[in-house]
Length: 337
Image (cartoon, rainbow, N blue to C red; front, side, top):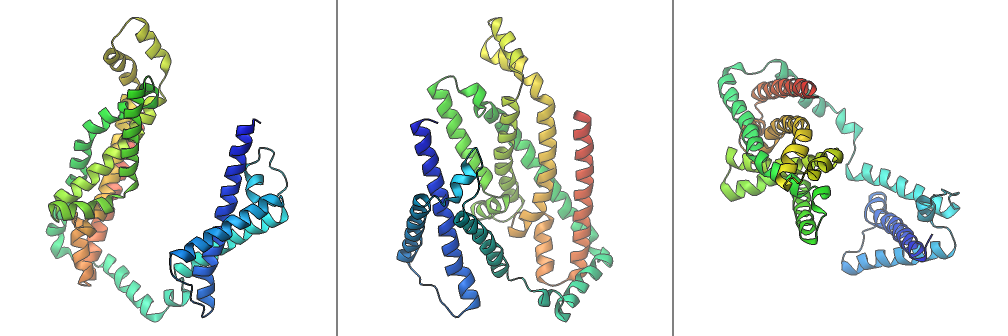
């Protein structure tokens, strides 16, 4: 191993040890100890600096005493875990479980309480006794939901197709300019994809107003980011022998794309697109809860009014449509393989 590699390995191990210690300290001080005692953690930015300082000192000590857990994790030889390092890992794992229990406020007593069971009984009773008089209204909202998903998917296809070629590393690594374009597009699409459609729906509800247009825009943005990633990865995985053969004839880059790349990606692209529409139908029912239109908005209204029989009908209709869409998309994608 080179000297530079040794320095990189040591730095990674140090940062991982620092994280483990910092995580344990902040979890104990902020979550676990206050939950079981009357202790109140100190507020302020300086306290956070103090947590980090403890992590820095502890990581240096672990390195000096050869008790680093990270070195054993990163080591190619996977040597025996040092005793203190092993205890740190177990403490981090145990504190995570305990903190998760505390933060989620798990309460079996509330789950099996008379009040809770009665509320659950109302919902499940409503599912088997839906209010059929509002079927036409719910059907209209459900059709709106399906078309929100369909429109978002269709509009997202052209930009996704174009951006997928610009964000395929194998096609864009030829020069500094093309690689810069690749990097910028990747950053933008990764950022867009990291924001859930529910958040995009909130943004567009404020931007263009509550309704199906906001929901469609939210799904469209997320679809472009997701399909661009899936399409570009498929382009990167194609057989390059065909590309080299077409290039050997002196073909123009656009001809190479037309005759060597597109024939290899058509079927996977169709499969990804159909699957994405299936996802969008599911998501369209959720974004309605925050003003994205469709049957989700209707569900939120009746749930807020505690009209459970109406809610039961809406849930049954959503479940049926999602099941049908899932079945159809699965069969179509199976036929395309």
